[in-house]
Image (cartoon, rainbow, N blue to C red; front, side):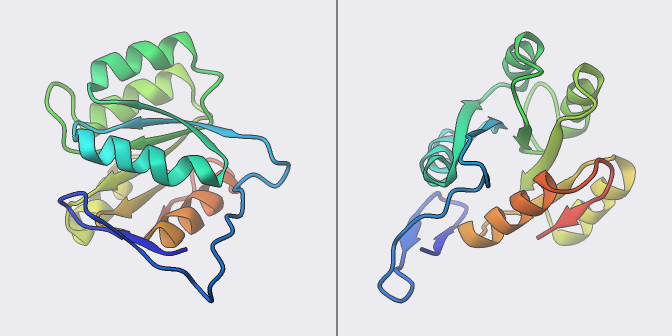
Length: 159
């Protein structure tokens, strides 16, 4: 079921071949625990609604400092972080550095509306596992997430 979002958080859903069954992301049917850090409330709500049916347990936080506090307490329980790059208080680069200091094995994907060239520059500067450019199609984002979750650390994947 492709879903597209735009920067205002509006959602459009269409059925593919009349089939709206949802395939879980994890092969063993376990839920993948995700920390989503984004200062936009509509986006946090949207990402939670879109990912949970695909096998994710999403913990969405607006403030990167609060997110790091949660991550510090449960750093071994999160497998993936979806991180907005441009946020007040602490930007994506500094947040990423703290996440990796706390748990070098956590996978981090930047989810941002930044231009493609800027996202590629960010990947070149940091060992970020991948990026998803807003707006995005859910199926494309899931493809990137599947790829990132299945790859060894240090190899970047982009949308």
